Structures are given as structure tokens and as C-alpha cells.
Image 1 (tube, rainbow, N blue to C red):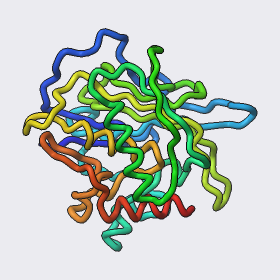
Image 2 (image 1 turned 90 degrees about the horizontal axis):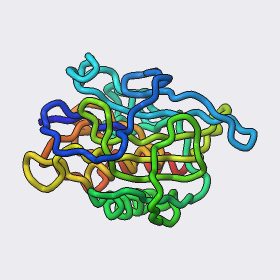
Image 3 (image 1 turned 60 degrees about the horizontal axis):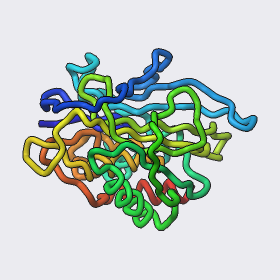
Image 4 (image 1 turned 45 degrees about the vertical axis):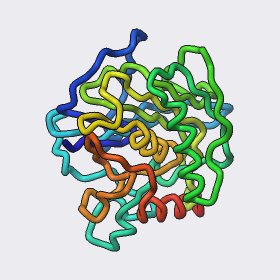
Length: 265
């Protein structure tokens, strides 16, 4: 069964299991879908600088009435938006017009009934190794109740697992960044990730592989968008769909080209 992935990963057939007791995460009413699966959350001013918030999702036909083969989000320097050009170039794109981290920032892991903390601790170094650059700082833990920030950044990069109140969603990654100026890309100032506890996770053929989904979400966290939806890109981590029983824990050629291009911008 194919599932769509982005900062949000969407499911249509997997059977949910019992959810978490905390208030489920959901996108706010002000969220506006500005492209297929890309939601603009609004702007905020942090230390006198305006930042934009985005949530990224890819939808399956019966979730929001969109075709799973609809046009993917526009790419950054890579040709990840589509077309029939070089397969490697079409197998990566950037989020928020190439916004990236300017320095390695720490993150904190909160409620974690799935083992997301272990998965993310492996995912971030995987992307950094592929790029030959540091994007993420040291990880820590907290007993605080974390919520992915959809109104404005709170100064903390947060990772946690919990119920997500959106049909078929496996997880969200929220990214806040400044706007680019000319050829100077914007700066990512904060990212939050929530992985939904309401699905069956594991190594079974009818389960979703946590490491695969978290590695994909971590790609958005460091600035990568989706690949093209052609067969040329199907083996890439950032391909927008994943199936139950599918495992992708090593970046592909397009993934590596994308993270190299991003780190060099």
C-alpha cells in the first residue's frame, strides 16, 4: 500500500491503534494550503526579524480530495518540482526556497512512547554525513509537554510522539524560517516534529517503519523537499510516498545530491 510522505505523511488504509491520552496535535484554522501539501501558517516577529511558518504534507486522493499524482511542490535549486530532465537533478528539492540552518542548533525530545528519540538521534547524523556538514546540535530530553509550534517559534526545536488529529497523518514537521533576499536563501530558525502514535509501527509487512519515516521527516527538518514522483526517484528517502513494510534508511543518489546542493548554497 502506498502512503504519501512529507513533513506530513498521509495514510488511507492502515488501521489505527489506540492513541495517546494528550490533546491531539492539529493544524490551526489559519493554516492555508498554498501548494499541494504545503500549508502556510502565518508570520511572526522574533527579535525584530520576520519569520514564516510552514507545515508540509502530501495527500492521498481520499484524504483531501487531491490526486496522489498531482504536481509536487516547487523545488529549490534542484529540479525536484518535476519534469523530464536529469533523473538525479529531479530527485531532490528544497523547502522554503532553499532556506537552511546557519549553525547547528540543539533539539529536545519530549513524550516518546514510540522510540522517536532513538530514531532521530540516528537520522540527523545520517543527513549530516551525507552532506559533510553539521545542521543539528546536541539532543536532549524533557518532561515538558511539547507541542509543535504553529503560531510562532518558541525558541526550542522539539521532537515528540503523540496523537495527530488529521485523517491518515503519520507525522508533521513544522519549519520556521526567514525570507530569502535575491540569491541569498532564508535561514531556518526553528523546527518541530511530531510523529503520530495512532498507527501500527514495527517491522511487519502491515506496519510502518519508524526509522524510515523519521529519516524522511528529518530531511524536511534540515531543508529538503520532495523528489519528483517519477519512477526514477522511487528509491530515494525523500520520495513522497512510502508503503507499509517499506524500509529506507540510507539516502539515495538524489537525496545526497540534494543535501550537498543545500549545504553549498
